[in-house]
Image 1 (tube, one colour):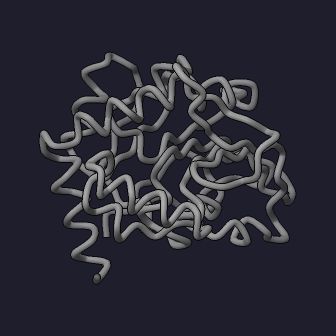
Image 2: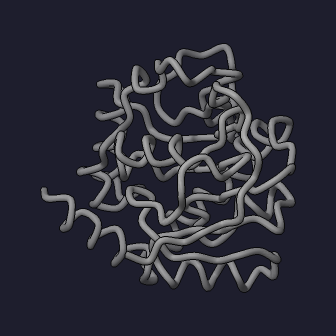
Image 3: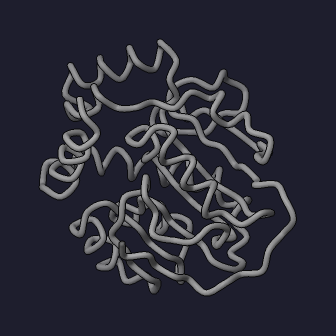
Length: 226
């Protein structure tokens, strides 16, 4: 499937009403597992980007405000705005972020990178300042995860577009300018989702990363419209 067709399917799904069950699942994962894992790593200093903010469930669970909230559809941006969190709201594709290099002190990106693959990861690293942190969760690319994702689609738990998801190879994190600070695997232990550091990194995983290099000052945000 071409990138344009896949992006169109994502926009149609998240811009419509069919995403509410999936959103409910994300909301539970965000509140029960990801927010507790990310919260100790979020310093709230400088510029913060919530990339793929969706309807704002994770930001709400973490008490995040005065951030830059970015999503692929206006519908999700509107849902995020309706939660009342102050900040800047931008519609954009994570694979082509409209920001200059090295601008954000902290980036949160939850359950998005398995739609973009390495292109989205490269962009998030590009716009993170040296010395800044990235808090990421995504489906990794093991055979177990591929099989589980396809079964979830078959059972109606995941939307059809997940069959074409571009799951992330964990070797993509092995970069000279990236340090892994912490990581966990999200598991369902009834009745709750939890982030486990003991299990192998398979399925939905969460990472706290640091971009290495000489720290830079925080410039003003400039949005490229071309």
